[in-house]
Structure formats: C-alpha cells, structure tokens
Length: 399
Image (cartoon, rainbow, N blue to C red):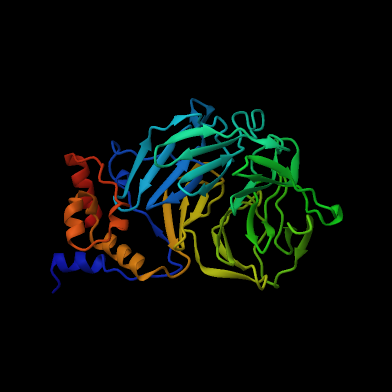
C-alpha cells in the first residue's frame, strides 16, 4: 500500500496543462488573521514579475436592513511563489475614482485611467494616473490636447507607447469615441471616425484588442442592453473610420462586463452578464480568420465585473467579480490558466513552485546554489509572516 508521504507526493505531481483553470492557493483561505483582499467588483489587475496587483473595486455591504456602498482605495499584491496577499502602502496622487476604471501595464508602471466614485457617474474621471510598481509611488499625468469626457467603463489598450481609449459612460449617456494618448508627449488626440454610418452603438464595459492598426471591439452595452458578437466592429487607425467583420456561425451570446485578454493574434473572452444571466464560458477569437471557437473549459463559477490579465508567457489570471446575481455577492478568488505553451524554463519554474510550496521560507542563497535562475528567485516575496499560524497554514497547503 502507498504510504502517506507517497500519497502527498502523488497529489502534487506536476503536469503542465494548457486550458486548465486552477484556483491559486492563498494563506488567507485558512486563517482570518492572514491578509486577504475583501471580495470586490469593478477593480482592475495587472501582473508583473510573478506578482498580481489589484487596484480599486467596489462592494455593497448589508447592515441592519440597509446597504452601505464601499469603494476600495487599496493596492494589493499577490505573490505567486509565496502564495500570499499583501496590502501595499502606496503614496502620492492616488486616484479617487475607484470603480470601472481602466488599467494597463507599461513597463514596470500601472497606468490607470477614468473610473467613477459614488454615486456611480456623479464623480467620473478623465485623469491618467501611473503607479511605479517598484517604488509604489503614484503620480498624475499632466496631459494636453483633446481629452475624452469624464467617464467610466471605458476600454483601454496600450500599443507602441500609445494608450487607446474607446467608449464609456457618464452614468446617463454613452460614448463610442476613440481617443489616443501619446504617453511620451502626454498629448491626447480625438480620432474622429469619418463614416458615422458604420459607427457601432455607444456602450460601456466592452473590451478591445489591437491588430494591424485596427482596434476591435468586443461586446459591452448600456444599463439596459448587451451587444452581440454576430459582427465585430473595428476602428481602422489608417483611415480613421469604423467597419466590421462578420465571424463564423458560432459566436458568444451578447454580454457586457466580461473579461478579455489578447495573446498574439488570439483574443479570449470569459464570463460576463447580459442583464439577466451571468456567464462562465470562455471563447477564443482569431484576429486573422475572424473565427470564434468555444473552449471546453469554463470558469469554475459564472462571473461578471471581474478583472483579467495575461502575462507575456501566456498565463491568464482572473480575480474577483460578481458571482451571484440573486445574492449580489462578490468573490475574492484568484484563478489562473495557461493560454499557450510557455518556455521550458517557465514550465520548470512552475514545477518547482508545485513541489516546493514553502519556497519563500528557503534562504535565497541556497536557492541560487541549487541552480535556480536569478530571474525566478527575484520573483519570490521572502518578506512574508513567519509566525506559528502561518506555518500551520503552509502545512495545510502542502498536504
């Protein structure tokens, strides 16, 4: 018969799998006194050097028959190697509009644009803030040019040091304007479409992708409608005009508030909401062939108003969101899934993390002597709690 040790080893046997979604283990799953972000929606995440950063978000809290609305002016970091969350002490000009903003990674900076405070739409923003993720210092960019209106729920993507912003809402009216911010010159430009007849309906909480000087728009809607995927609109930057492509027979159901990432010429969308239903399905759109494909894998639970990000190696992270329409409840669960096969060194690192759940407790010099590349050692947060409670927690994770 197998010994208990053999069973534990077998349980942790590493096998790389593409399109397999897994729940990221955290110390906070077991003990209340371990830091962990509260469930939230309307936040954003970025991932840098083995760390998942989440900023902002919203949750309603029911107290004595009434509901209090809470916004999170917080920057959290989850270290994948250490399996620990940490509430970071950031300084500087921190954004006040903390829900349905846009965020993107630019080098080691998180760029945050737009968003709303409470009540939704009453205090929207068209400001650009950046956070140095190494120093945790925030600053507000002084921009020039034709700025977008103050809105939230916009879609934003960065390409060649230019941030493209599409659509959004004031809370009362909706937009489909396309603006470009040159990050180097800090100048906004309004990219007016020439053929308004092809201009798609105005919307918010849509997503966009960039390919061959085209900005593709996926889904979105208003407070009352969700737009379908029978046709995918795109804005052509070379002609400053709107057009559309008609995909294959199979395509996702209409939705807004979904997650979307781009891996080379593939766009993945997951989850979302159509006004009555919440989705858990995952779809892939080929930007070359304009064909949709529904993946066999699903999110473990239906989600909307969640946030997603994909690393350069192709690892998707999904955090938070609304997980129940009936209960209007949020989650703080973090999932990950590989969307492409990474490098052999990355796969070896993933195996190392699987077999060494306590790697953050090993002296870094010993890891270096053992042959672990410095680039991966730098991804470990060695500054984690070291009390008896956390040690017990790690034992539970290991077993």
